Image 1: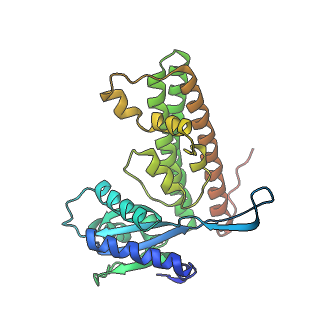
Image 2 (image 1 turned 135 degrees about the vertical axis):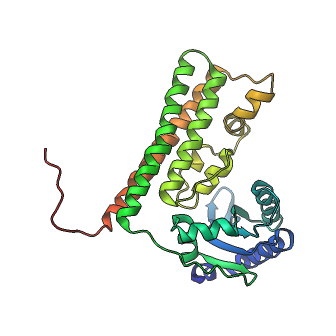
Length: 300
């Protein structure tokens, strides 16, 4: 475990983190809280038309947390995540949270699962109630990792690509509501694909907002495809994110040609970015692979 990076936070940010952890412990009672990433942004603004002073503003920090709960915990994960999100808002920060039972974590460590192994090797324990995980974390070799990543990519991104093609077919036939449902599926599986590639984590949520938030641990690019800064942008994203529930339960659910076309364009952009992130990760892994002889070269 490594707490060096946490200590690099400013004193106000550390104070916020301490408050957040205290609130989580009081209401969730986890066995461990591990931070596996954070993001902070400082805005420096100046304009001769506004005032003569430079305005420095530090945005809310975002913390990526793994909460390990007792196996007897009955609350569903999404309920615990919502509790953490409310606490984060109360102390003026954001939290992207993953919740796992202790048994699942131990099994993951025993089997060399990449996400939990990496978090235990390099993350920072922020809270520990003295229940130690005795199974050591293991790192995968580059050859095994490369094969695992390729298999996950082909499976999940293949689904994302096929859902997008189906959405395009529906759009061409004027089935705009079905178009949005397939676009939701495409974004969901594209996010799963890149999360598996970059972190090894397999999310279970279908909430696109949470899936995109999880990708911010290694890239901000996907989140900005749906900025949600205006009412119009919020409408586009909500139409996509709520497609499943609205199609089932909202009898007035309709999508216009214009809205479907705009959302399809955004999803196409996101898929392209996901492909670039995958290629970047693949090249990084290949760069650290050992060279062995005899070489296995494909003849033309």
